[in-house]
Length: 365
Image (cartoon, rainbow, N blue to C red; front, side, top):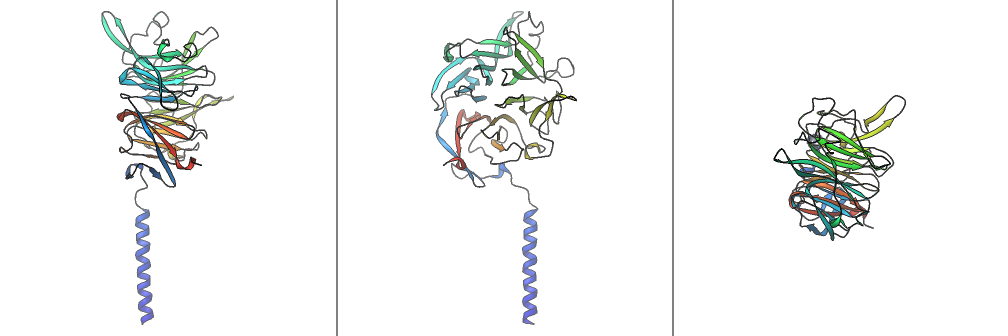
């Protein structure tokens, strides 16, 4: 009887344990937004993001940041109406006045390309247009303060008679490729005209005489909610490789707000296809992101995503699997840009008007 009683109690205890395990396994998966940050270091699994001090401050609503091909840091300091040049130690080397800069890129000729605004007088009205500017840093001997700003877009009305017809179009992102061609993303409210939709990617190519050839990237849905969409692109990022693959972030109505577009050319097809299939990995999960604003790569081509809505930085491998990610408004608020260089992660902490720097514990020897 004693043995039977013990057996019954033992089975009851096992049953309770199995019920608890089953209940725990059915709870929601780990959510980055549920992390409670108690100290300065951000822990995800076995990896710690170790902050580096001091933070770099003095900006006003900065919208973009890159580490250029020349290894200088360029910050689009939007509400201070300037593009700032820093060295890798954070020392300001110079700046150039430019109205409301929001995106910046650099090609292998070391030219800078800046999305900004300019004012002009048309029919006695002061109007502000979105614009793309170029700075020849070699010509300026890398003295950005005395550099010349050259406007590329909108083009001169003698070349494009409709260039100044629309003030509601805005350029949003820019990137460059190995052949020094340029992609510029654009958004706007008019997307029914198949010839000239607002939501698109524009390609700029310079011929031998340095004259500019303008075209549009085909195959993108201007208001698409799935893959191959140009629905309010917020940034464009190219690879440091001899290809024209591009990763774009979208803030419009779309289920997949970070998309890696791979250029394919064969006997049957030439154009862009999605490198990663829908639902095939963490990166391509529906509604994974809130408001992604930028993408960067490290030396292993891991993908970092700055999500302004979720106050977070996500990291994925080249297969789209999520690795170490971190964030929270105790650490950053509305990050709009991310960059990686020499084992250090740089984050543009937009709402706090500063640049944060982190080193991964796994990269400390």
